[in-house]
Image (cartoon, rainbow, N blue to C red; front, side):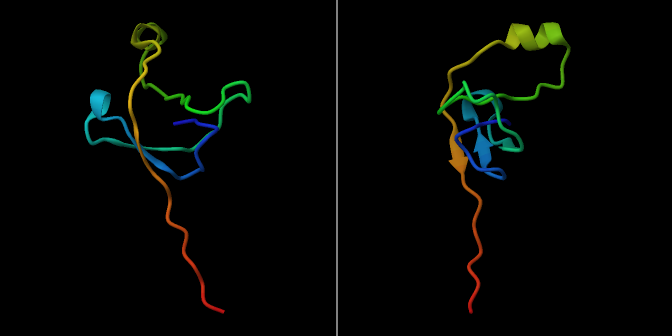
Length: 71
């Protein structure tokens, strides 16, 4: 997943499309795409990706946990 509004390593679920499958934010998008947009890599032919198209879906976001260290 590529998203400008989420930190690298955040986990995403898209239940309406993929059930419990988990995706990880590993990239960012062009700056013109702001909050709420994501881009997914589809391991498919270009025609299949175009057929999949743009979707508006609800997502579940799981932010990475930051470890606190004692001094």
